[in-house]
Image (cartoon, rainbow, N blue to C red; front, side, top):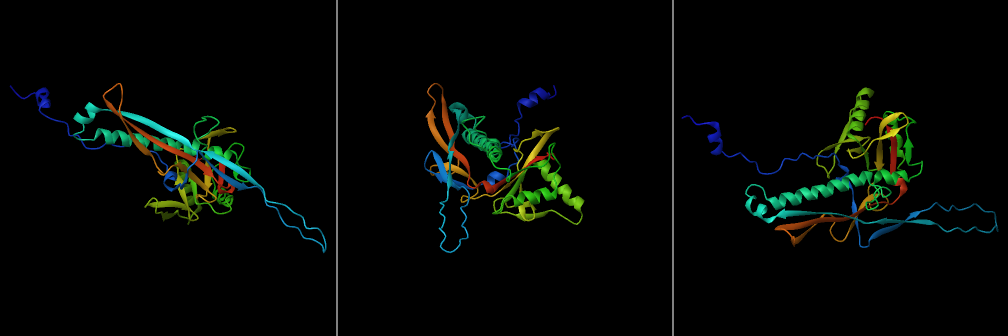
Length: 302
């Protein structure tokens, strides 16, 4: 009797490769360059300059006017980003021959926290979800017209001049431009159409790979930037110019000594044979000067 396939299958094991192939892949380089600063309170408080009191030219013996500087106090609250994962002890003990079940689950949970932060960094809105912090889009909605340029009642395609104007809207100098992948493709097409103009690239320490630049300014791809209707255009997007630092720019906040995600082993779950691990991050976002962010709104190249 010949060897049948059903019998041969019993004698053969699958070739299991160690590790897990990553399928959830997001385009967001902003997270790699965003600076963080520590705060020991539940909120971070800073003062913004509220106008300039100018001096006056006077005649001899004229009374000298007086005027003190005024400031606006800004408070940014820390938020708790956390999640638990339970790992069955039997599975961890009996099925970790190829992949460490505990390590894989913790790594996957950490990725989940990171992804949630990355989404909130762009689209967080306390008026919609009170437990999260305001992201870049919500913060820019509160800025004046000098920092937000709407490119057309029904949106408009990207131009090189628009990007030049956007950069000029950050007077102390932006550190990067942030846009969606589709907008980056449109930018490359503009350079090719201009003739004799090729994309310039820099290798930044944070990435270790070439980064596309506009006049020497890095262009950061972020596909968490959403789309919105504008007039008759069903889907438009935004491009941001950001100044990133802890002095007068945009930066992240973290509570306590650890700047990143913390891991706590909570021990055995009371009602099942499993270990419970908690990953958490006390985190927030602050914009020191309103002139450190600018937005180009209504771009149809999504």
